[in-house]
Amino acid sequence: MSHMTQVPLAGSETGPGEAAPAAPSRKRRRPVSQQWAAWAFLAPVTLYLVLFYAYPLYRNLDLSLRDYTVRSFVQGDAPFTGLENYRTVFADATFLPALLHTVLFTVVCLAFQYVIGLALAVFFHQHFRLSATLRALFLVPWLLPLIVSASTWSWMLNSDSGIVNAALHGMGIAPVNWLTSPSWSLTSVIIANIWIGVPFNLVVLYSGLQSIPAGLYEAAALDGAGAWRRFWSITFPLLRPVSAITLLLGLVYTLKVFDIIWIMTKGGPAESSTTFATWSYQLGFGNQLPAFGPGAAVGNLLVVAALVFGLVYIRVQRKQGWS
Image 1 (cartoon, rainbow, N blue to C red):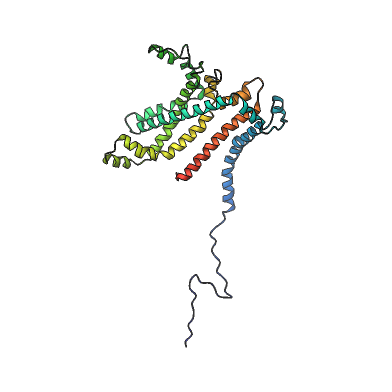
Image 2 (image 1 turned 60 degrees about the vertical axis):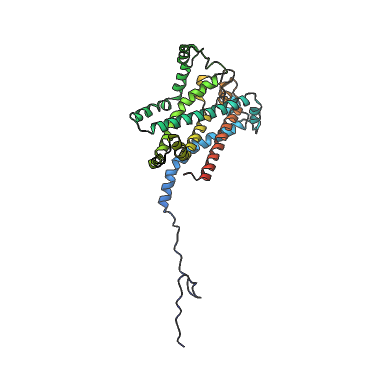
């Protein structure tokens, strides 16, 4: 019988005494120079986040867990009290009204800012003559310093010399005490904040509209879909990711609005426009005997609320697969 030489097949195990071929290394380590370059680019951002975000959050948390006075605030020897400042805040008579005002202020502002901003974005998406110029003019409220905007609205809503009451008087309507009436003070600051926030919604939503293919609208028009049908079937669904981030950023901003309310009403009269932001400032800095601990506790509640909504957005984003 002839002896046939057996040739090992590819992928078969090596015979005894044969050295296995070294598998090629798939993961190659970066050169040391590239690692140092990456850390060099990352270091400024990390330092900025630590100095201006992490450390202030840590200090605010420390303030809320200790009994700080003016003397102990300077010397740094405030005793640890645990959650006592939070119990003080929850038991305060201002807590529930401030919570209600914060929720109303945030929800109403977000709703009107988004609806008006979306309507303007769809309007300017038509690319008519002077649309770019008018769109630029709508950005003015967003570009103005907040102190200028708040002061302007305070003058416009002044009970005696305001232009709004003058217009109402010309139409035969009784003047309204916008800033000095407990029934109207919260409405006044809501109107001012809506005016300031609409341009942001306009810019972001208009950018989202630019990414929607025009062919979808042409196909829908050929199928006989009207303007409203095209909006609800094409525009609104495809804008969901952009709308979500717009509402989230608006929520985080609106929760911490302080300067507009403080300049226009200082949270009054009779705390009728007090929110968590103004209450936190008033506790920590607005009284002759500042309560640093409770003021920091109220501020931390705002941070937790913003964090919760941020986590909810991330969870929904991953579930929906938004890019």
